[in-house]
Length: 275
Ligand code: NAP
Image (cartoon, rainbow, N blue to C red; front, side, top):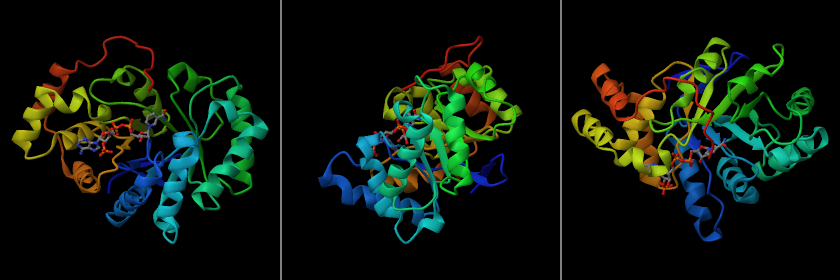
C-alpha cells in the first residue's frame, strides 16, 4: 500500500481503519473485534482510536483484536484535552496502553486543543517518547495558526482533521502548510459518516462509470494528494475490503472536475471544521 512519510522516516499507510463508535455495546464487541482483525488480515495496519471513544471501549476492542498481532499494527490513539496536562497526559497514556494491551503506541495525538497550553502537552509527549511508551506524537483538529504555534524544533508527526468532499476547507492553507513541513494529514470522517457525500449524484455517477462504489470514490479522492492518509470507519465486515479497494482507484481529471463542480474547493480561508 502507498504511504505518507512521517518526519521520523517511518511510513504511514494511506488507508487505515477508524473505530469511533466501536465498543459502545457489549453485544456488538465480538463482531467489532472481527472487523479490526479482518482489516489486519487484508493488510490494513493503521488503526485509529481514542481514549474518549466509548469511554475506553473502542481501545478495548482494538486491544482485543491486536493481541498476538501487535507487530502488524500501526496504532494511533489520542489523549482528551481534559487530560492533556503534564501529569494527566502521562496517566491517560498509561490507561490507553492498558486498554490496548500493548507497551507502546505508534502515534499519540492531542485530540483537540483544550484549556492546557499545547507546550505543556508536548512536554508530556516528549517524556512519554523518551520512556518508550509512544514512538511519535501529533495533533488533531489543529488549524493553520495552531500548527504555526508549535515550536519549529518540536517533532509533530501528524495532524488529524476533518476532510471529505463536503468539508474541504483545509485545502486553502492548512493542507499546503502540512505538506510544506512534511507533516502527514490524517483525513477523518472521509465518508462524511455515510451521509450526503455518498448519496450525491456526482459521486454516484463517477462510481458507476468507474465500476467503483461511492465510498471508494470518496476515499480515493481523500488520498489523491501526497501526504494525506484516510481512516474510514466501518463495523461491517464486507465494507473493510470494499474500502480498501479505494487504494487501487485513481480518479481521472474528469472525475476530479466533476467533484469540484459538486463540491467547490475553498476560495478563501475558512475556520477548520470539527466533528
Ligand atoms: P466515516 O468514516 O466518514 O463514516 C463512517 C460511517 O460510514 C459509518 O456509519 C459506517 O457504517 C459507514 N460506512 C463505512 N464504510 C462504508 C461503505 N463502504 N459504504 C457506505 N457506508 C460506509 O466517519 P467517522 O467514523 O466520523 O470517521 C472515521 C474515523 O476518523 C473515526 O472512526 C475516528 O477513528 C476518526 N475521527 C477522528 C476525529 C477527531 O477529532 N480526531 C473525529 C471524527 C472521527 P458501518 O460502520 O455500519 O459500516
